[in-house]
Image (cartoon, rainbow, N blue to C red):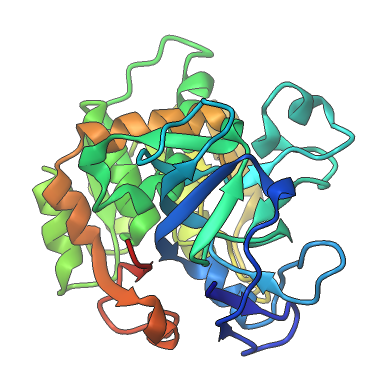
Amino acid sequence: MRAVTVKPGVANSLSLVEDQPEPAPEEGAVLVEALAVGICGTDHEIIAGEYGEAPPGEDRLIIGHESLGRVLEDPTGTLQPGELVAGIVRHPDPVPCPNCAVGEWDMCRNGQFTEHGIKGLPGFARDRWRIEPRYAVRLEPALARVGVLLEPTSVVAKAWDHIERIGHRAEWQPQTVLVTGAGPIGLLAALLATQRGLAVHVLDRATSGPKPELVAALGASYHTVPVNDLPFEPDVVLECTGAPTVVIDVMCKAAPTGIVCLAGVSSGGRIIDFDAGALNRALVLENNVVFGSVNANERHWSMAAQALSRADQSWLESLLTRRVPVERYAEAYTAEPGDIKVVLEFGG
């Protein structure tokens, strides 16, 4: 069996193992044939040796956390052979913490969670993988070409879930949404915003390529000007770049009672001179909220599956800018200009 692996903490240790053992029954009752694995910035950071944790007793980690597969067998009867599924990435910690104990493992408080392809669990970039039925999310057959987008969609589904929960602290009638960054997360965040009937604006540096057209196809507005030059104050901001200056600017730009969701991860190491007192004053006097959001739980994965089913399938397929067979794995993990979402394809 083939598997794409790294040695955690060792830069550029990516390799395709041709004789990987079959997944152990202990990994889960459901046996799945891999169809595709999406690639994101997390994978590149693991390949660079920045983080990643192999399963206990192993020195290599099978990567890949954005999955799409077809069920081969499920002796529990929960799933049927041939059904499309994606594997939930994060599993609750063994203690468990109060959040993990009630299924909110995306909000784990003690950090002892595990994650497929990232932290302590083998990933999905292998010909076959196993998972417990509760962590397998069904997908409609119509999503066979684009179902690999379920994991990143679950991330923004969670972001929207929390935005709406916060919004209902008072009478809440949002009209305008700003999404900063037109990568996969930003575009999917914009998709879910348009599905809510909101006026959507997307800001990105790209002036050419597919991003402006993808935004226009959603009926949203595309901008390349600095945040401070935008002619409106958004009720909701989803910050998906992690760029420190953009993070600060959107917090200052939000409308009164506005909500800013930080979904991009900053690299750190950059010091910015700004007036923290003025920012504090604005947040307090305008009743604004700024919060961070990462990962997703089972509820959000189900919400994401519904959102993908409602979306224009040709638009979703346009996000998948490169499909690379597993035999050419090195190409898939090498970024190219114009990439939005690169997919590593397996047989089947």
